Amino acid sequence: MHDPTGNCPLDLDEALARAGDDREFLRELVEMFLADVPARLDELRAALDAGDARRVAAAAHGIKGAAANLAAEGVRRVAFDLEMRGRNGELAEAPAVLAALEEEIRGLADWAATF
Amino acid sequence: MRLLIADDDPVSRRLLARTVEEMGHEVIAVQDGLEAWTALQQESIHLVIADWMMPEMDGLELVRRIRATTRDRYVYVILLTSRNERRDVIDGLAAGADDYIVKPFDREELLFRIRSGERVVRLEEALAERNRQLAMMALIDGLTGIGNRRSFDEQFHRTFSQAVRYHNPLSLVMVDIDHFKRYNDSLGHEAGDEALRRVARCLAAGIRASDAVFRYGGEEFVVLLPETDREGAREVARRLVEQVRHEGIPHPENPPRGVVTISAGISTYTPGAIVTENELLKAADDALYRAKREGRDRVVAAALPEPAPA
Image 1 (spheres, chains in turn orange, red):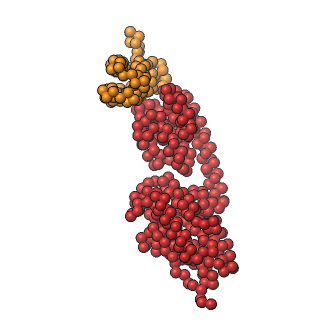
Image 2: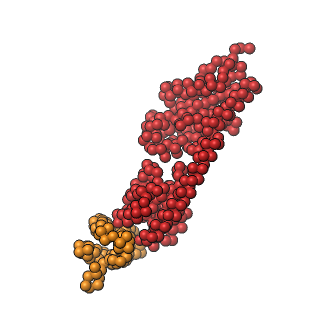
Image 3: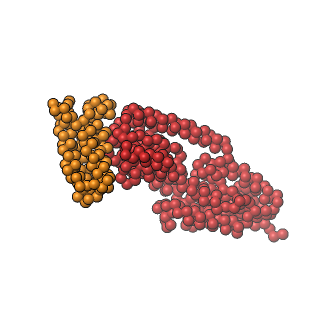
């Protein structure tokens, strides 16, 4: 189910393969991700506010890993970007990247609503 | 097999659990290293799949702890690691992990890596069973590695006969772990077995080269002290009681010290006395019983018939 603009937040073929070709199961997994991610985003924001680069990296790493399980490449890529900034101690642009991450996650939630 | 999955990401945990269940295995899923460690104490687990980065205790530390503890069966450990940490894979394997799989994991790869683990687990089970059979035929107690009851019976008989023949004293110390049932009940059988091993090691380390310690029963040990009179035996027994106490194995249900302690009952054959092997054993046992009655964590010596003055 790619949307008309061709910008699907999930690589559906890969995601289904991971979920053993079970659409219901994939739906369940995406729901789990969406239920779990707000707390992770809160942690990320708190870490950023505190200027704690290692904490930012750790929180972003967690989101990256979770997204990778679902082949949600958009979320994964941005989370990875944020993780690397945290690891390198470069938090100057981080707030903008965090905003981009939240945008990607919203996109995933929208897609999930119609899946 | 029974598998333990430890991952703080719920999606990863769910995916892993599902894959493992589809293979027909039983799954326990936890979300951090500490929960994983607790589960390992309480359940008999064959294989662990653990994420590296977890709260409370990470995968690396978990592996180290697993390998540092003696268990009655081998635990096969697969670490989950993401691409960034690949250089840490060496650390994971060095810490004792058997295998690793890169996140996000590939289902088929996971399947076959678990199968590899299963081969190792089955091999180890077969080996353990063979060892149990050997132990039964041999004279060593499988759990503690010291002499078993049969071995004691033989050696006691031989040593006692020699003592009588050559007019040497001989002492027995009957040792029993205090409130062991409570220990097992509250901390689990794995912990109980480990405590038995530690106490056995303590006792073996505390005796002299000419002495021998055996596992006499479930939580009972017996020490054979050839050419040793009552005073000598008291010294040895006191030292053993102190050493076990000093070992400091936590045992909250054993007041007042709150660590594992032993009670010891001594009996002594004095040359010329009219006493049989069984009477000597019974006397040590009675003395042990008195030590328990009088408060545990102590030594009591039996009063045995002394030989008539020459």
